[in-house]
Length: 83
Image 1 (cartoon, rainbow, N blue to C red):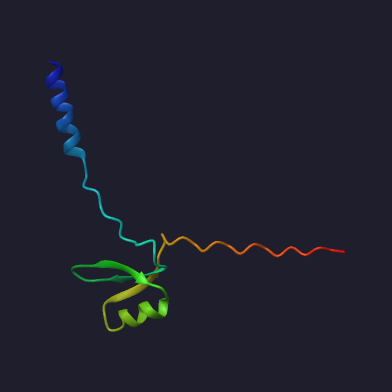
Image 2: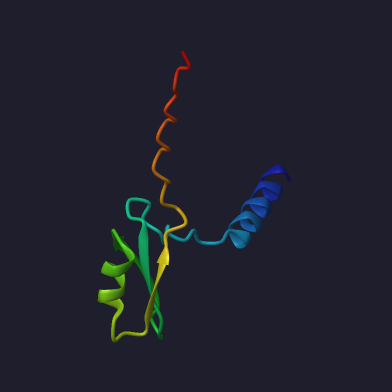
């Protein structure tokens, strides 16, 4: 009885498991090009919007800011001493 229960639970777990999707955005680059069409994809290998727009020119594509690119660290504020 116990083996049957384990088999049923295992089969149910396999049935509801969804395949994992690879990460679309590369966190190493700040700008991505989204290509539209039958086989659409996102290509994140651009360091600026003008660079991406030059590549996307004449294609069914657009440039977007990478939401997974870490913002550069903020510069520390300069403290001034009052004499």
